[in-house]
Figure 1: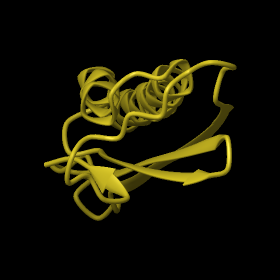
Figure 2: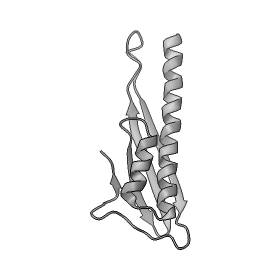
Figure 3: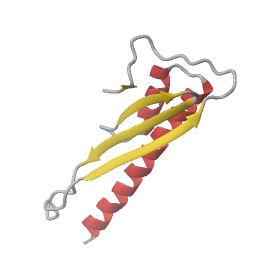
Length: 110
């Protein structure tokens, strides 16, 4: 039972880190930071294996961070892993230059 509760706490922590990664990336892009640098900042906050994608619509910057966390294993191996998913939207600041990285598509990541 303790192992299961510990795993659930780990899922909650990693989901929070995924939300923070999406927000960090969206804020940086809204300030006008380079897309590669903004995504790298988000990836530093994100749990391992989370991918960050970026789309733009007018002045809105949409960021999605997604990943998967493995199940707890051991006696609880029957439990599935957990999906990690977060979205953030930010409005580009006035005067912020839109500087996507050369060759960058709709996202970046490993």
